[in-house]
Image (cartoon, rainbow, N blue to C red; front, side, top):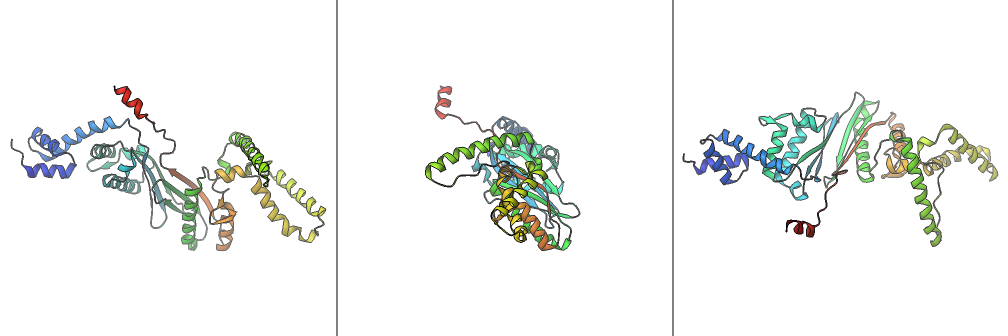
Length: 353
């Protein structure tokens, strides 16, 4: 049968497939445009399957926060190249996926796959987009966090789209919600830059801390060799490296040692209570280096480097007449944990020869 140019153009606009592919599809199905769409989708799925074994390690992190801070979602959607991550079709796919996760309360990439979209499943939609865009695309992971009755959730995605963070906080006084939401966003920005892996030292395994302690002390001792050669002040070698090691007994012993030192210096006992808290803070800071590297609460806040995040929570809570607590922390960095194969171009050519 005769297939008009107008019909081919219409199918092309609906599917983004090539002109000749559209014409062939219409011929195969007798000019029925809906059947032609399905024909191209089936053909596209076949093409997409061939791309599915290629590593997708580029892409974007997408974050969407509800206007009332009751919910926030974050997705990592990967493509093979940074170029495609800037493609209008890919950007539209990211926006559509993020909106679906919000509206359907999706909790995982697996659950998203079966959600209905455009008359089929999300998996089918995604494969169709892979065929159009020409690269493997993977919705790698999803975070969906809702606030409880006494809390808010906020998020942040860095301008390059490669790092995103969600933080949920609890508080008591509802009138403080705007200020707590702003604080949560600032904490998200801190975490995006400083890369804490955990919220608290309580989430770190004791065996891991023991191994890291050995490595950290060796690192400091090695650096001290160079500092000594240069005539510069040496690092203190800590007796402890995490709050988990600072038991009540350890802290009591440290305080007694400080009192003995103040007494030896001839400081009057009347002023000890003004000196000791600051010195105890210094003792804790010197002996929680693993926490400072790896935990959000243990890190010194980039907007006030005299206080840790935990101390900022406490002091801000006092200012607001409230009790503030971070209850959930999630950070995505694009492609983390993906091993992308590095191909030697010369070897690849020789292999083909």
